[in-house]
Image (cartoon, rainbow, N blue to C red; front, side):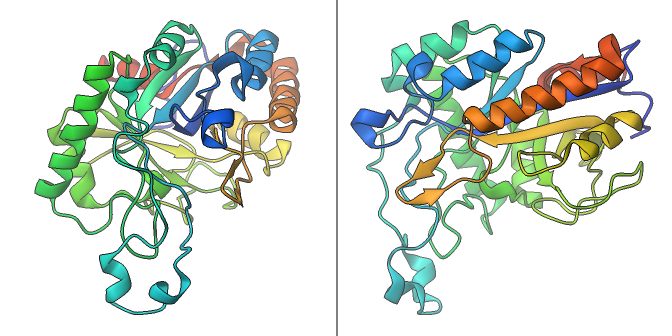
Length: 311
């Protein structure tokens, strides 16, 4: 995509903030907070950041019926046996329906009413058999993926949780079959590529997680212009200079976080917590001091809808 034709008129660069793995788990009941504790849990750190930067918008990528208990294999012996290990879940999983969104009306009400957020789609169960537990979409056919996506969308519809037609795949993996199935189900944008290391330039391409050889700085139409792709290029471990370099070339500063800080012993580096929000506050303040109203605090869906009118 031409770096100059996607921004809102009068804006030099844009900022998006997305957070993965939202579902109704609560600390006291389930042992961890995945957004289910609402204002009394992890979300209070976000509220602090919203108070500091009211123009900020967040896209929560949300799983319809979360079943993952551990992102890494705990059945160690079985995980060492080729072929056989691919036939089983290598860690215990939640009973189907435990976290179905349509069973949690207060959760739905809270996120529907918040003015600073939108909800995107993040898979059906967030699990897969074999070694790569969180990689929900691997070698499945378009037909198989289509069935999974339809069940996912059905749960969202039944829950009345308002959602946008955007998707990020669990663990970033977006095969051609998944992309085609997304298009078949009316999905308009995909967030797959994550690159936190490649030096920033107009031509910088992804060499880390997810789709390869797509821009890490700009939104980009893929699959014959039927799907708008968004990269991730910044997180808590990134330096401020990377954010400034992205803004300087008129790019999208695309920030990633995860709602769960610790899941049964597995700690997340980019978890939403006090220190991460304080870092983002500092980054935003520094950028605003330099660029002011030239920055477009937006969301992936807002960019998508804006580009659809000029496509």
